[in-house]
Image (cartoon, rainbow, N blue to C red):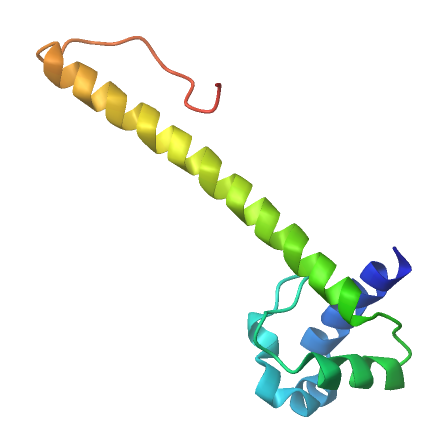
Length: 110
């Protein structure tokens, strides 16, 4: 877990420190998440700079953080799809009932 914590701390530093951001100008620091890096940057360059600044993380930590972020994102999207499906079902029900009033639906309950 130390590697993941150092990765998060390095990301904070890279976003806050203009000198570090300048050294990573081709890595789109402004698009980095709070705890993960994009998939299409030069990871070796980022890891080497982080090591020079005293942060210790490896490629496996970066990939692990990316996988965690992608999993959270996919779960978020799945929940949104359930909400959308329920909302569309409610609209269809209103059309089928001729626009009658329907009791409140909690869209986030399964």
